[in-house]
Image 1 (cartoon, one colour):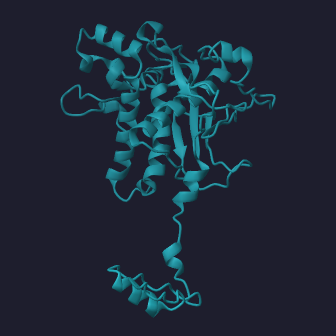
Image 2 (cartoon, rainbow, N blue to C red):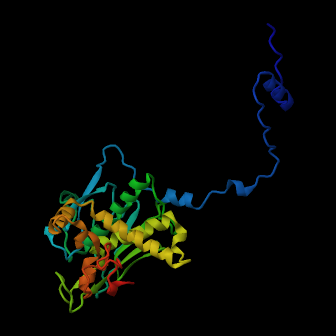
Image 3 (tube, rainbow, N blue to C red):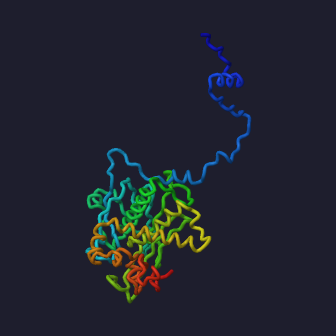
Length: 334
């Protein structure tokens, strides 16, 4: 059988004819190198580099899986009998003092009357490591720093597990010296009955305030209340930041439903996170006699803030409508 005469590979017509004779569709002609390229067809979205700059730590061989840390599962005024203190497993990463990791950098902005800054916590200190971090204490600023770091990371880990991928931040800022963009968390940002996520500079800001004279519960009238010690408030605010990275345009209040969606989702995440603490759930069900919908511990949000401001409600917000008409108490509607 005679072999076919090889065609010159540099001749497009010959290559096409050979391909057709063998029953193969001819390949399209390569574009000329002199033809101008359409720049709009090779544009990379702005979210791609942002996602690369906000990637979590990738565990290496020999690294621990988790970093155990103490936190308040409710707030600083809750009783330990309610499971208010727990040791949680935060995904491990090496930390600089602050603490400062791959995703979050806790910044201490509070200054004393003498102009001195508070000392920041070093969670990689061997002694601190052996004790699973700082012990919970409302009067320990370093525990405040540990609290916001741990709760923010737990919320991020919950989102990452649910979505099956890493999340990017929605704010624009120049990367740090190591090329990473971190969400800056300020546990003592201002003296005010508030906390907020600022998408302009990429910060979580938590306020502190003196409790009212008619403060209820385990709150001392005139004592300082820290919003950074409320598990609900920290989870609520970091959810705003995570949602901003998922849907950046949802920060634009084009109609009232946009802001309502932000608030509703942030409240739901805070409530759902509470169910990850067995001690809290077990105690709440026991106190409610098997009816969890009747437990303010499971359905209420930011109880200490409501009590410290003298509110008559059990919590700042509630997931269950007590009167059958409104999920928010009348005197706490924003």
